[in-house]
Figure (tube, one colour):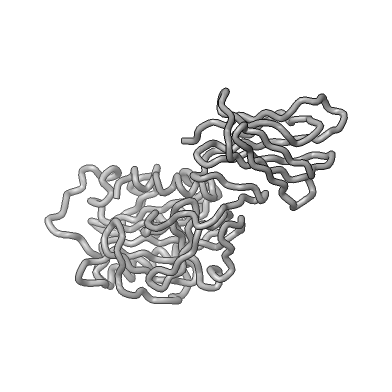
Length: 332
């Protein structure tokens, strides 16, 4: 796997939950501990350590300095980080003893807990046959040989983390519950999976994104954010309007340049209330929310394929009689 691929996975995590980046100050004690277990890092930029002559251990931290993922694989697999690594004439594998020893070492770095469910038969992935072990505090994806499910070519450890998001769907694959979040699969403990409410913003203990990637991971319902507002498809950046609007009533028009936009969600929530008031624009781009009384409101304007717009509106019967006017921009 190239560094480019690893960065794309991290970027997906950033959009969904945490602002992931190079390890912050909180990771320093963990890195010092890793140096005691594995020796000096081969790369301080990416926190890569030597496991043996051919294999390396790659640590991934979030901005709080928490270790959330460990990748273990041959140098030849990480072509960007090790461009001069000798390409093997035959696939490289860890023996059962080597795999168990390396797993134990990593558990000294951050405890994975006791084994809860041993892997079933290997399933398919973009990287080869994969099977998964569920531990008390982590999940382990193992890329194995075609004809030997105990010959491990590489493995990834995903530690359970608190994540906030709006689940798109939930599935059980190879007896492991998984949740789809922003187009990627994450593992769940069985008891956590039973509490998931698809489409509703919530905090979950999840691990990943795992090696099942994006396969079959898509929305099955409308998603809502922490304010109860609609999340557009695909999820884009939100344009925040810094200056509050002050209007007599919640009515106006949504456009893209000079063109009116039909089917746009215009949603508001009064400060201190959990009730979301909604309207959808007609073919002229017009909307109206008649149930809104005077006061301060948070708003969000969304349409699939466009960047969301959000900000604050004050409804004041003494305000100038000027309608609201929102402009949306095509997403990326």
